[in-house]
Length: 128
Image 1 (cartoon, rainbow, N blue to C red):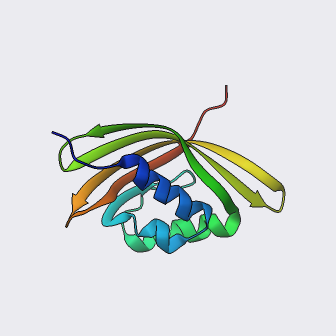
Image 2 (cartoon, helix red, strand yellow):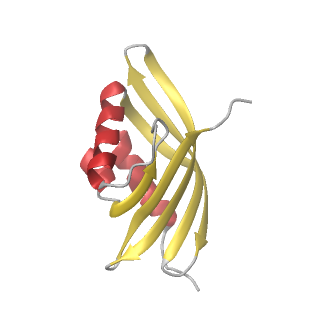
């Protein structure tokens, strides 16, 4: 059964908000009960306040300049969809520009007619 979700559009919205350092725009894509494990997360976070704190800290330490999805695979599972992707984030900080290549897994669920992220994990692509 097809979920009717356009996962690429949701991930593109995430990238647009993240690249603009729009914390509220990023947070608006997450369900209130989302489980989150970001690239620099020392632990799993499970509340909206914790997710917000993560992004505020990450964007304070380095300024995102651009984020984009390079590869994306979508699995439609009815009221849930799983996204597996490779992304690229450009940052600017006191040391100059840097690039972070990431592996992303996101689970989206249709909640009250809107597709929201209920699980998110990003880790660096291993060197080599």
